[in-house]
Length: 104
Image (cartoon, rainbow, N blue to C red; front, top):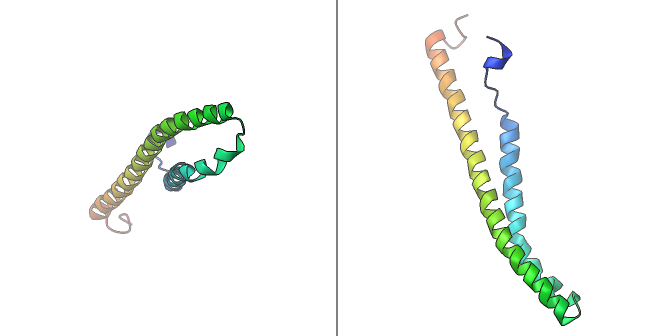
């Protein structure tokens, strides 16, 4: 068998992706806490109104983005667990067939 007919799973990448997505999710959820902090800096009422409109639109997009990040995080978790289970199942089948030392 050549190197191109094997599936190689990078568990480190899947685990770090899961962690990074969780961190992004936390950051997106925490943005609301800073909204009140910037209300007073806009000065003129028309600018403040436009910025409030922008922030409200951003909130809608942020919620959509948050949903997508949460879905990706769940998919990374499922992929990680599935590949770990598959590896264990293949190991068990191989050991059952060939013995724990691979038939040596």
